Length: 99
Image (cartoon, rainbow, N blue to C red):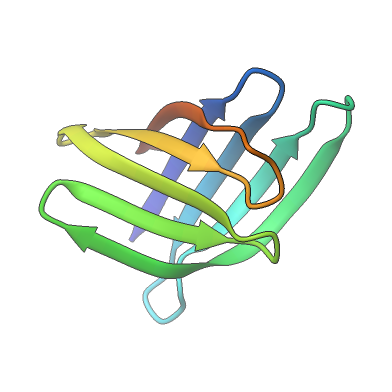
């Protein structure tokens, strides 16, 4: 079914990952969350509570319950915001298909 890449950043954190869709499994997010302390947290988690309504998407991933919310801006791009549950930060970026 394909893959979509996420590029998103906050003032001191960033998220670089791929969402992998398989026919029989929940979508899986694989990548790295780069932290303000200079280290990267590897990610390999299913998407929790994925919902699509109209032109909006919303999901959580990881035990830390990072929330990603977005709006389609075209048939190939979704502008997103992400918010880690452990910190009062909000980042923004883009989800687009892997070519």
